[in-house]
Length: 274
Ligand SMILES: Nc1ncnc2c1ncn2[C@@H]1O[C@H](COP(=O)(O)OP(=O)(O)OP(=O)(O)O)[C@@H](O)[C@H]1O
Image (cartoon, rainbow, N blue to C red):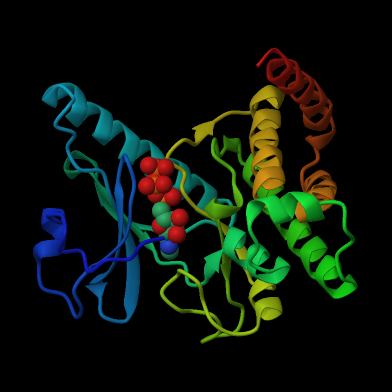
């Protein structure tokens, strides 16, 4: 995650009003930008998601698409938040201007936390080590995290929402103790094990949809399963714990897990055919 001072690109108009600190551009993706800002209140940092106009799209179509995407993401987040799913609260939005302001989640992405615990190694080394057993303390900590991830997804699916892009980058580990690991949101400091005990908060609902279908839910799980295997090959085995906790949290999980078998099969066929 490359943090810059936010001066490289013009910020949305809302961020040009005075605030206790200048906005910080946290990420710049293909579709949007994420700023950390205190525009709402000096002691309440917020995450502002901004989708700037796309010069390569027809302006009317672009304005409509941007408005629809911001509204849809905010709507899904609000629904989840109301139902107690761990997601950032939405504070304000202006879909026509392309932005949404939400609660700033302290901590680090689960991907960073897991990789720190497993040790920063090159991908090829990871593959070679994929079969090697993990130290017991590592295994216990990770299994516990996997359970919390499974429970968060179970709660999400229970509300009738599928995320659409579940990865360990789209889950933050919010420190339970104040002042612990709350750096810039990039790497965090402190004890790696303690960081892993943070609360799982799901973020990035840009591709989320409302759905109660077993198929959509199974695909959501499959996307995470694939992402997990490629990002954390040493911990791949532990993914089963995510599914166990999902099953314990969500009473309709059984039929989703049956569907997941079909989805995996289709995935294997597709990869065999290239
Ligand atoms: N509420 C938040 N609190 C703290 N950090 C956040 C928050 N939302 C996002 N981030 C950080 O900003 C990064 C980018 O956010 P996000 O994934 O929502 O944007 P994006 O990938 O550009 O969105 P999209 O996929 O919808 O185009 C995240 O990986 C995370 O590190």
